[in-house]
Image 1 (tube, rainbow, N blue to C red):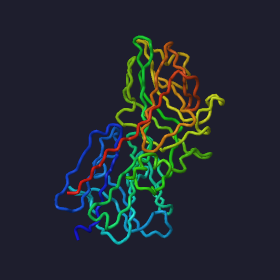
Image 2: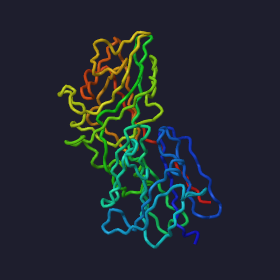
Image 3: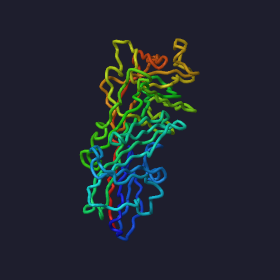
Image 4: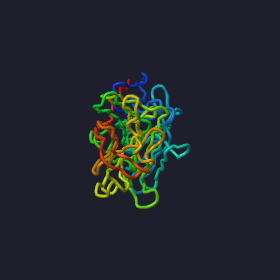
Length: 385
């Protein structure tokens, strides 16, 4: 009976940019099905890791057919975590039947908005779709990840079921480049913001195995719905803001991430349409998505920006906000890391772009350079001894 016990062999590939470091769990040698996971070292404090799965767990729902089918039979559903984890894997108390079973899993198990957390709503009547709102604080955000696969007793009683988790959100990082030609020029970054981002959306469960080659692209991106701006209420938009206790200093000719210890933002994938993107014909009014920095520009020991002419609404103490819009047509896909490099090319001491009350954006002294990196997923290389 041991060989028929249903175990989940999950390659939880939650890699971010630096994926050459992996954690490999011990394996048993007695022929039982075991779970072997390799998880890339995360570049985000809240990113999915092996330890996070063991301590926080993931949710598993198993059906005797595709979850979207009418009257599909649920075989079992449970949380997987420390209680099910042994040195060689996760064990469920269930056994294989003669059906093709469909395995759906997600992390985190739940979020209820308590103490600044995000919210996760499981829509059981809609094929177990997940309505998700990330936390506003980068440090509290979770790396929403989803896995799907099928298995049978004949094919998987010995080999196990590989559950390959894929990132459902977009990761956003802001890098500041001091491109000034002025000697002794320093950019001091006290805060940063992504303004008017889509707040929440609903993602359906996959219909293609998340370990399949087709999943290497934007498999999860196309499963999102409701991730658009609305006309009423909070309009389904939200600002994500970080204020540092101590400013980050960037010398002339250098660049660095300004995200801080909380790590990069995880936000709902979205496409910027004319309704929620920069419209120069409106003079910068409206609710375009933008990147903003709370900065002070120094020339030696003298403050260049903010100056006496900087609007009071833009100032916060010795610093002031400066911003750049994200143009219409920009796409943030699930499972991709977007690095926005904001390059200060000011050579006259004019800080230009200003943001007033989070709405108005003027002139363009900041050059926006966008690069896209796939979150690299490490080959899990399961071996059953």
